[in-house]
Length: 326
Image 1 (tube, rainbow, N blue to C red):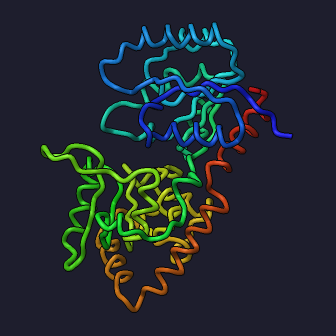
Image 2 (cartoon, rainbow, N blue to C red):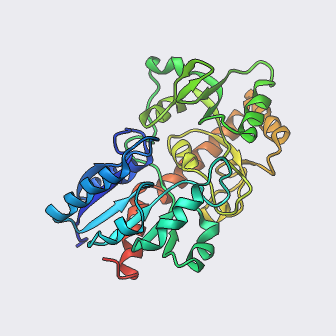
Image 3 (tube, rainbow, N blue to C red):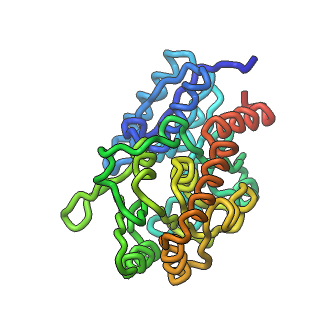
């Protein structure tokens, strides 16, 4: 019988579509007693006061395990005061993220967690050599949010030929979106989820991704960077798990997780957006619809067989037990 734990989850749990909630929801589905502690990554947060509240909660309520998701305000002295098994589980790119120095704060606190999980499969040795107990563990698809659903006219406002789910906030993604916009006679929707040039552009999250899949032929994948071995976002799991055909940037290591070009997804390579555009045009042609549907179905099956959040939490507890954290 699987052990059940009382777990404190800390992070941006006030944001419904935040990655932390994928973990929280699956732990509840697994039958654990899970409590939320909201720890926002928002500029101006009074982290010393927030840390006091967190430590007070831990002193006054018994938990078996604490999971921290990108708790930026915690320092060595704060983490060392936590007397129960304490684990960090983050899902972002740190080493190689250039917009601001994420890696500085992460590497400063990471050695003091009992164990760390992250999305950077190519950096395991790097982190281990810095004294960080680190394993790669990406997020997966949520069975209630990311699944096949029937078409409904309520989803018509999402209709498009091609979509991209995410912010266009760096030159790589700007070039990607610009190239798609140059393709003639297609409708491209970029679901951003924040204000851009004074206009709020809606995002597509949670169940909305499955809704989009009923009215969108192709979704595009492009990470913050596509040249870092072993790192890609959670988007392939969400999009393909929602039964959507995906053309995405190839990242070294994806084949190890079962992603196969022209079998269950379509890759473009080396940030070659001409290649991406050619493949968009090819798979939008009516005579190639059957091929597109076959690949889409294979992608859906891959995710629901191997890359669900239940697969991730199973691996999570297996690693913690192997390393005698719990």
